[in-house]
Length: 314
Image (cartoon, rainbow, N blue to C red; front, side):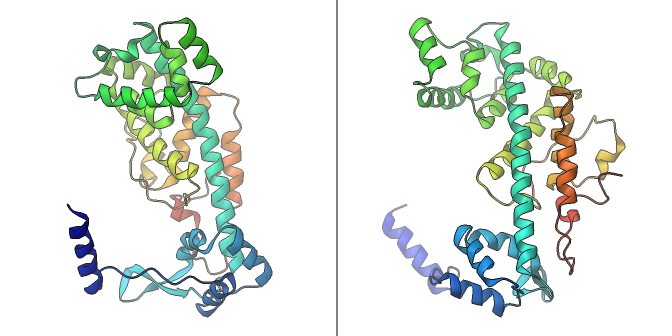
């Protein structure tokens, strides 16, 4: 597709009103006036301006959205107008809750990632220290070359790190228990997906799961949540694109959780952490954070939007 053809297509789309011109730049004071004109109650304008300056209107708009009125002509759409009795403080509290939720997710996923690196390295390392370089230890459908390219790029990025430099200078290559230290969550998850079923199952059973296919779906969902959290994006009511399988989990209550909302994945994180770190207080920290969810007068938002139907302490 030529650049000229692309330009013509964009121009035609703009002329047919499919694509709009970018919105005009607004000063912070103008942004505040827009919010007030749409019905947002602002008790402390100086404080609100501070948030617009430090966080930005666009990032906050993801939190404003939940407080906007539904379009009576289209229940799947929202109007610009805020629901009656929406206060800037409500939006600020929701933003801070979500920030803490992301931090809690990253804390859990760091521990899960480190533990799974060890599990994978220990399982494959028994065959050969360089097993990760040999496609015979992976399924036929696994794109081993693509994974190796990703791995090599990570090694190159970290080649000046002490332990990488040491091994490259004194050994012919990195054994898997060293190589795994440069993997990110996505690279680790991708490798696990490509492992032979018997090896995946062996690791899954460490976490009291039926088989490796179930753990694989958990890791895909965790990777999505990690990426959302690491990029400081809205998490609390996010639709989870990669849905985990809950089959084989003994507690019938699992079936009551919406699989497309975050709460069930925090429960899965807790389940794994209780095995990895039996004395962890992460679950208590999660419950304490849920208690901090903003109690807004107009009930525009609630923990149901996160996937909870009842009080998690019950």
